[in-house]
Image 1: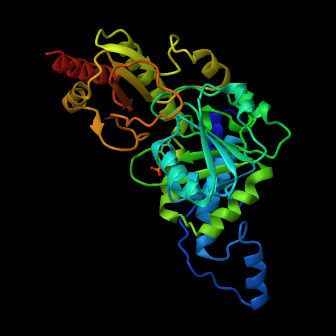
Image 2: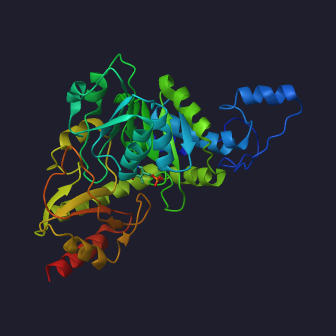
Image 3: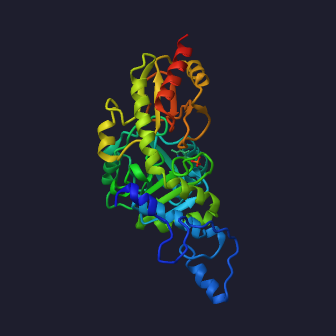
Length: 385
Ligand SMILES: *Cc1c(COP(=O)(O)O)cnc(C)c1O
């Protein structure tokens, strides 16, 4: 089955029961009642696969988890209440005093905050590495290394990581490769074929897709699922069944939406590349991007999130540009149907983002791209004036 077909069928009620709704129902529960102590204790022993208590999930979260695991090709998925809670649970699963964790220098800001303010406080040695390190990661791996954390493409910089090379460098060792796959979604980067062990998503973005719910997802291979699932249980995270329902609903149009985000993203990126106020565009789907070949080898497409640098370096110009836009909203997040703009905060420690001009990030939404380009053009003219 092709992906566009599978995405409509994963996680849906099966079997020949008559009078079945198309979508899984929303099951709300805290207490679940059992006829006997024996039945209750048996269900509690199987809490990751049977209904036992609301915090461990209901049939609605299970439907979403099954859908996402099948779509990405993982063993099992775990849903969480936000993208950041998915990152924190996955990283904490491999944290202990004295552990060494390698984290890409292109990681999302709150991921870095977690590393520096939580992991570090509990005695984990977090070391940032250049996202373009590839097989060179072997030179940083130590006896105490317990995880390698990737995010590809990088949050504000869009470097593509050579994850197959990183995975090959630690093959045969008990060092899981974690990857924040939010940009590519389960559709555009087949994590487990590329050597990832634990794939993390801010479902808040494209999976929910409509800017109206928070959600996190961790998809694991068989080797590491139990370790991460137990940590999620220990931390007490529980995800709202209503938000799981919104994610299941958003998921059905994900591959269709991504096609349009990519087409619009490419049209906008090409226009920006030809704009004489722009120094460079950061988007691996562009033929001129230094990571284009790597992206083409490993990814099945691109989404609508990209960066660019103005020729001028002072922040004031970036602020004027953003304020002048009409169709691009100013605000956190991305991956909804609408276009957005933001000015990334500088975070890098051991590497730099190519170029020198003021950095701007845009999410290209599902609007008609002629209108988006006209809006960008008018805002550029405001800055030039
Ligand atoms: C937004 C985002 C997150 C965090 O997701 P929330 O649902 O906002 O907690 C994590 N990673 C990336 C790459 C993101 O863009």
